[in-house]
Image (cartoon, rainbow, N blue to C red; front, side, top):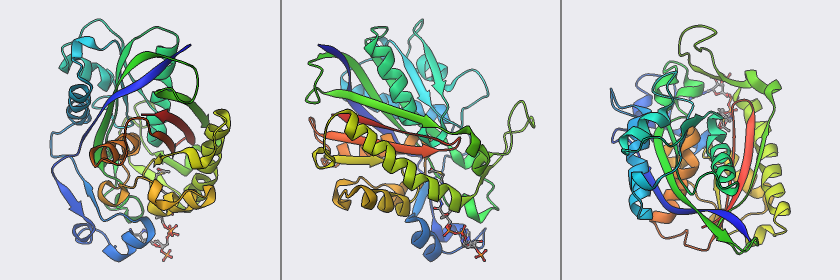
Length: 324
Ligand code: ACO
């Protein structure tokens, strides 16, 4: 027997304001054709003035809890994965915890940029497996629009705002891959690649928030290799085959990265959940938003085997294999 972290409910929230590629052409030298061809992105959601990462997180978290049939008072742990917190401190998770009327239990943020969801899921899973908590609300939430240089066409067209959440409870499993819940997580980083994707500001360096800077081609090259490797290790660690995976739910960076990774892994496109066209890259929020999209439209069903993978600044990368 083993403890499994089972996803009981999935929630999502996207700001009402949609910005199309066509609208971006009014402020930067770009075109709908260029953006769609290079990235697959058609539009992104952008938070309203005054709408914060915690607002998005709370809305997604509320839906996940409702769908799980849980209340704030049932939750033992609040974790938010974000690179765009409301404040340098306290953690955005503390605001989320307060919004759900809970006191005393731990709350903290996880920072692994676009890999934040797989990193955070791993942290939550380890808390559950060692018996420290029996339930958790885990949210990926971002307002990347706040750290974009809207005059830099190489980056501002790529990102969007949003939040996705999962409510989890600890359950006894048989210790096999038939169990519901997180079966394994696999995390990596290489800080030597720090300067290929970063924000050029920070509390201790510039005392400003800074803007996203990126060597797009280099990121692309590393992404396909690292993502395919971490998917393979998740499959091997569970003694499964790639054919047994029902859904690949990747971090939604770029349609070309999704396609190249799926091709390298021989995963058919109709087994890949894609939301990058509608959401753009929402960093730590992109996997739970894609998961919610797949659950909401009935593709992802209880019992399905879902493989999540992500790569982001650091570099960080990793995967998580979950039976829904
Ligand atoms: N509109 C029009 N032209 C553009 C734009 C734009 N928005 N952005 C760049 N260009 C131009 C460049 O200036 C360049 O022009 P030049 O040839 O005259 O110098 C030309 O397009 C080609 O630029 P590249 O950067 O070489 O274009 P590339 O084909 O590599 O595509 C892209 C750029 C889409 C960023 C690609 O490199 C990519 O997808 N990289 C992955 C990065 C990514 O997804 N990052 C997200 C965060 S990381 C993550 O989540 C994994």
